Length: 228
Image (cartoon, rainbow, N blue to C red):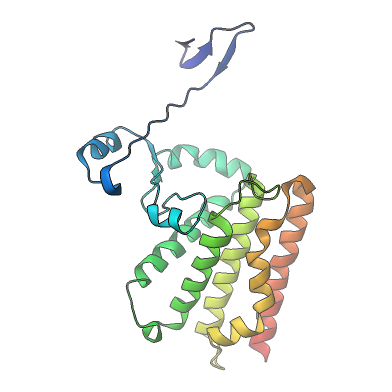
């Protein structure tokens, strides 16, 4: 049993405890149609929405939450908390969402040859984000949960690689292509895809050092490839 006191939820227990209550509602629209009247009525009142995607489920993508239609109206309210945890997180999250949105827009272009250099980078990095960051293995020790610091470090390396690659091909006078970057840095791309396998049980300091080492390696390799 709970009651409200001074804006806080109090549990009638011994000893008395204060906390918060989350209410979760589930709506299953026919055929997954989110324009169904019942679903639309529910979306008008909820502040957080997780939209499950049948196609992701069929691809064995866990969690099968569609990142395009899901949302939270608490993002602004939570910004002070994120700032206190890591000032870089909000910018990294925004960068990640932008890459996924750009990839979705580019998916409508059938002829891959028509894509610009930077667009090809977007497609490949978006694939890493979707398959090696958003997809989790709930039965593993390394991936059943992802602490905040691990999330930040992974985003930092993926976003850093993306920015460096785009800068490299757009500013280089020696016509460096994404194909050349991908060929010469295949080991780095593999390491980006393998970041999720780091076990949080090893500790925050240990993982931050490993991820930081990869970030520095990314910077060094891009400096070298532009000097070739």
